[in-house]
Amino acid sequence: MKNENIYILAIESSCDDTSAAVLHNNRVLSNIVATQKIHEEYGGVVPELASRAHQQNIVPVVHQALAKANIDKKQLSAIAFTRGPGLMGSLLVGTSFAKSLSLGLNIPLIEVNHMQAHILAHFIKDDAQNTPEFPFLAMTISGGHTQIVKISDYFEMEILGETLDDAVGEAFDKSAKLLGLPYPGGPLIDKYAALGNPKKFPFPKPKVEGVNFSFSGLKTSILYFIQRETQKDPDFITKNINDICASIQHTIIQILTDKLKKAVKQTGIKQVAIGGGVSANSGIRTKLKQMESSHQWKTFIPKFEYCTDNAAMIGIVGYLKYLEQQFSSQSITAKARYVI
Ligand code: KG4
Ligand code: ZN
Image 1 (cartoon, rainbow, N blue to C red):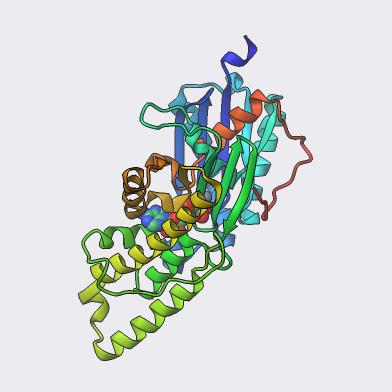
Image 2: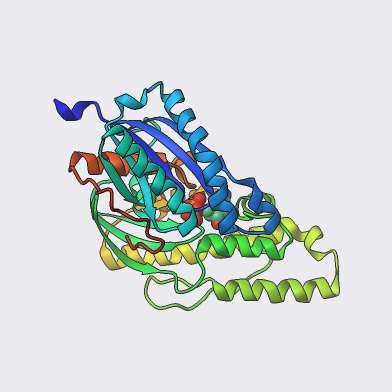
């Protein structure tokens, strides 16, 4: 049968990771990610530098992905790429590369929505990963987004709620910046939090309607808290870093799980998946696992490598779209704002 051996080359370049993956049907053969270190010294992603780094990285990353998969480009069935959302200068590199390669190889081109990919990463066939059944709820938590989405089918998604200001990843990164930690601070907060007391410093939780979120107030209350305490003791942060990180993380996890509980109550759907960079956080992973027994939810937590930005998740969407022959034309353009 024609659809038995589909090889997809996937390209992701929406923010500051250049990634390429090769999939054989729904299985990942390779998933190469080049993380751009240059942004660390600026305390956040510098768009101009990100697009330049993508240009340098994209050819070697694609070569590595093909070599690791042991696939010749002539065997490829289609090229999938991230069309958006993301930084325009970054998206343009992946988009142009994918278009040229599909044209050169005379194979179909498949555009992918990055946020859909964070959700559909759960359909990557992997012995260590379970697959949700429709319908399920997905909470996408990344550096650019915070949403709760109802997934009725692969491409039937409805946003139930989202952040009204900062994304949860930004809340982690901006809090870390206030503590003098380098970018991206999320993983560092996670690391210190493991050693601290989460109840030591209580921070207020925002009051937001429905299943929407807000994180800007938390950032401000952390700022005032740090200013107040360092006036009393200039070494306050160094002495209390573990407890401060544990308290910030605890507050963020409570905000996220409170809204998830609300969404489950509202829809009656007890299958809950997470996706996006913040789903790598060990606190949210543990909390969600606990909800399986305390709330009888079925939870789906991606493998670490499919949490933060990666091309394997773009590849699985490419595969699903290939099966439906959902191909894109050569006139397609990148889309910085692109709703699910
Ligand atoms: O999905 P992603 O790689 O890129 C976007 O699409 O935004 O998410 C990156 C975000 C960053 O804000 C980073 O700090 C956060 O994910 N992140 C974490 C952890 N690992 C990555 N936040 C908290 N704990 C972690 N372990
Ligand atoms: Zn992402």
